[in-house]
Length: 114
Length: 108
Image (tube, rainbow over all chains, first blue to last red; front, side):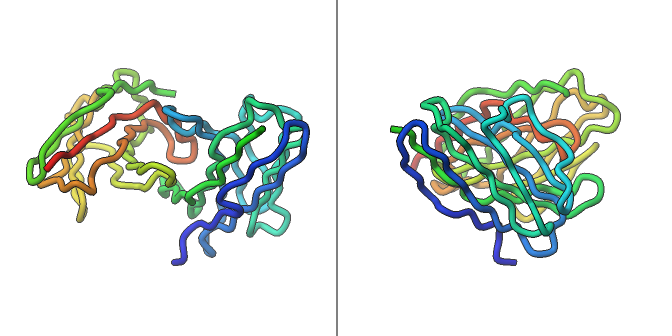
């Protein structure tokens, strides 16, 4: 069990640029989740996948955000035309299927918008 | 989704037992209670999960009364490394809703 891996750990970009983050879940986990966390707040759910199917999306996920999990393994989260308000920690988690299997989180990608 | 209420912060000393209570008056029949721990610049780490009565693992115990409207996370003999934010979550594990958590500070 190598844990959930996220890349990069830090990303600094200028407003208006596009950014893409990658998440590699624990290998046997078929569920994958994305969260966003701002300073002093708990993580906020963005979206989740079961295998390659995106089953749920939060209203926080504006049309500038897109997430994919093309082969049911790793996932990418892209933010287009970044804005100052996108500065946050983006967390990925994965879990086994089935009822109430705990989510295991990576250490996130910290995005800073200049 | 059930809303949770937990203290904003708690202070303790090394070696003491720490109990963090979470209120969740609107918990639904199918909801589980899950606790996570988070250190700065790291993702949350799963601690323990329960449905009713008592659950114990190698790091913590979770006490849930019969009405399930509250729960208490118990950390035995805390150390400095237990300084972190602790989140109580109620609901289906697939739909985690985090509050602002309890910031635990353990002092020497």
